Structures are given as structure tokens and as C-alpha cells.
View 1 (tube, rainbow, N blue to C red):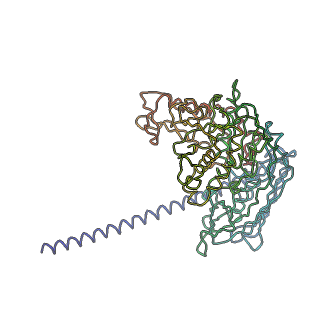
View 2: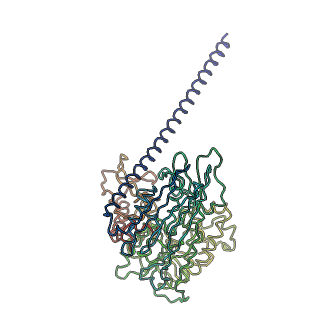
View 3: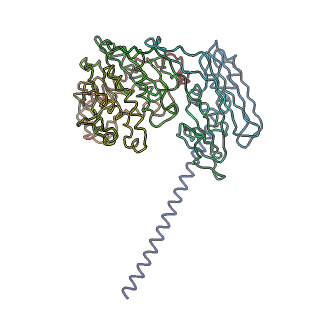
Length: 625
């Protein structure tokens, strides 16, 4: 009897549990549906806002053109807008804009005309208009009568120009005068969704139809930028996702079929083949005893604002009496010029990975070959020694002459995460590890190397970078530091001994807020962000390079601004760092090192022109991004 009641009670309990589970699942389903409806409402609101803004901008343009008060020379603006019959995805559009003001392009006129074509992107689209200063600009959209997505986009683009800095003007080839025209075809396909790395979020880029989405992608390729090769348009949600894929015509769609509510297309982007010409190195070994600072970069927006700050800090401290810093070169591994060619002494070399001009996951793999090519130029023979730096380094004082070591010896920074006997490298290159030899656990930056020694290291460095990119398991094992390991292996193979140290003994670098003092260093590396709280965990101050300006993926260039200083030391407040750092408690010396970084950063910003040198407006500079 007791067992019977127990079974009955258990059955009732199980039934109750089942009911609760069903109710829980129903609640979760309702929550998912609510989230979905909220997301759809947000997207609809964003689209409506964008459409209202487009209408507002169009009206402003109409008023400006009618009054001819938009800017000096507005009377030279020609606008032709022809709207044909509606198709399933939008209307036929042809528009031509010319703004020739005293022989120069007025970017305001061109950008405004793009707005007239219902392709307004509010704050950022003016940067993507094609053309060169001093020439007419033209953007033509045409749509085949019976094909709503067969849009051809023609833009005038210029060849890559060389640097104009006085330090390099006699080494670089003269800027080309010819302007080429590139025709791009959308290659649209309905009911398909294509792969690619996202370069513009579709939720922030609504477009009225597939043709406008295709044009939005094409505009990102103006002036040889090669940033967008795939466009994906939501036929219902109006989202226009822009992507980059190196060989989109060879890629299979991520999704396709009648149920797919996306229309996609791709461009076959032109290859960048123009190679700058520089005076050749003579091979001399008796260079003046001094330090040549070189900084490698692929010229993306994120690295370029850092490059400006780095170069300004160099100028400040290189001017110190008796400084050993006598030369600076930015080594740009990119298929075209960028907006800093007039501000920073630059030598450009085509990248090994041409796709990195648009998007790639590891642009660092191009730097070793670029350094090797630079060593073949006369620019590399200006000093006995080279210091290799990163864009997120900042110089805070002139370095000690003792870093200029004899030939056969170099100076580097010891990185704790680098292994001197990395297992896979030791297995694949056993000849270099014979007799118990080990690699220096460092990387190329910061390193101070005799110029003659770097001629030995660099070609091997480039070779090992190439060899460790495959097979995939080696690439994954070495991860994001594989370029550093390639340098370390090259140093071992070439027999160049590297003296390594860490803070505070290092004569090269300190890294706030991880380090507590400058020590003997002349470089600060701001790879880590700093957050400061009081003893009750109340937030007080923060600075991180990833959120500076418009963030890591901003649409720059943008005008750099000074950073507020961290709070002053007050023992009673109990200042402490974010939980990532242990112990968290700040000391007066650690806080002072953070303050030194921010002070030097702000000094550099004050030295810089608000707009990159060589341009009148920030919009004009954006044409060369």
C-alpha cells in the first residue's frame, strides 16, 4: 500500500515536472519571439531614419543647387538624374557629377551629387568617391533594361603615387600623371548569400535596392582602394552587407535557393602591379654611426593614426642635441599610396598578399619582404644601425648611444611568451639548433641591428615567414606570433647574437600599465589599455588604443584629439587597475609611467597638423585611404 502511494506520488511529481518544463520552453519561445520582433523593429527604425535622412539631404542639395550658394564655383556643377521604370528591385538610375572649380575638384559637390542618387551614407561616403585632385570626377551607374541587378559602375582612379617628403624625393619615382578608368560589373545573383569578411555592417548600410547596394560596394574601391569585392543585399530587410573575398568568383555561395531572401554579387578587383622605382643600394658598409628608425605598416586606418603619433614623437626627440636618431622611414607594404605619403617619409612596396589591400587575416606576413626590399635601396645606407619599431610605439626620450653594438651583435626585447626552442621549428629546422643552440625569444620590434647584419637576417626572415604559412597546422600552432618566430629563427640562422632584457633593465622598451617604471627604456608600447578605479571599484579613467577616435574599425583618417590625463596620485583613494592586472593596486611610479605615456602622446598630437599634411580637408584626405 505504501509502495502504491509512493508510485502514485512519483507519477504526479513527474507530470508536474513535465508541465513546468513545457511552460519553461513556452516562455523561452515567447522571449525569443520578443527579441526577434524588437530586432526587426530596430532595423525598420534604422531604415526609416536613413530614408528620412536621404530625403533631407536631397532637399538640401536641391536648395543649394538652385541658389548656387553651395560653395565657390557651384555654377560649374552639372547634374543629370534620369529615373526610369520601376523594376523588382528598384529604379533605373543614371547620374553624372562634375565639379571643376578653378582646375580642382570640389569634394562637396561630388559627395552631394552622390546623395542625390539615393546612395547617401551620411557621414562616410564622401571618402569613397573616385578621382584625383585636379581632374574631373565621374561616377556613372547604368542598369540593363531587363536585368535589375546587372549594374556597371565606372570610376576614374589614379595610379599609386610615391612619397613627396624631402628626405625621399630624390629616391622615389615621380607621381604618374595618367588617370585610368576601371569598369566594374556587379555579377548579381538573386536568392543567394555570398561569403566574405565583413567590411561594412548591413544594419548600418540600408539601401533602396540591389543596384544601390552594388554601387555602395563599388564606391569603396574608388581610387584603387580595393576594399569591397562582395555585396549582399536583403530583399526584405534592405540591409546591404559589404564584404571582401580575395577570389569571390571561385567561392561557392554560403546559402542559395528560392527560400534565401538575399541578392548577392561580386567584383573582380584589378590587381595592383605598379612598382615604385627607388635608387639602388651600393652595398657599402661604412655608413655614419647613427640610428635609422624604420616602421612597417600596411597603411590601414587604425595603424595610420598610430603612425602619425609615432613619427611626431620621433621628431620631438630626434631634435635633442646629440641624439643618435638621424633618419626615419615608414616602410609601407601596400599596392597603392595612402594619405600619409606627404607627412611621413615613406617608401612603398607591393605586398606579397595583394588581398591585404582590402582585407586579410595576417598582414604582418608582408613586412619581412618589404624590409628586405627596402634594404636594396639607397635609403637603407644612411646609418650604421637600424631600430625597427611598431606603429603603437611612442618615443619618450633620445636613446643611449650604447645600443649601437658592434657588427654581429644586436639588441632586442625579451618577450615572455616566445620560446627559444619552439618544438615545431626545432623539428623542421634541426640544422640551426645543433649543439644546443637556441633562438632569441624576441621579435623584430623593437630591435636595434647593424645595417650590414640586417641584410643577412631579412631575406631569411622573409623565407621563414613564407615557409611557416603552410601547412595549416604549423600556421595555427605558431599563431599570431609566427612572424616573430620567423625573425628569431632568421637571427639564429644568420648567426647574429641578440642581447635581450626586460623592464627596467631594457634599454629599449617599457609597456604600461604592465610595467611599473620607465627604467632605461626610450620607447613606450601601448599594447594594453589602462583602466583606473578607486578602492570601491568606482570607474575613474580609461584609455585604450582600440577605442580611441572612431575605434579600431573607424572610417578615418580623422582629426586626432588629446587624451585627458589620468587622476593624480592620492593614497586615500586606493587607485587600482582593471582585474586583468594582478596585483591591481597602483603605485605612484606605475601611475607616473601611464601619465608619461599620455603626456608624450598629447605632445605628439599637438605637433601634428589637424589634417594629414598635403590636404586641405579631412574629406580630401579620405580619398586616399
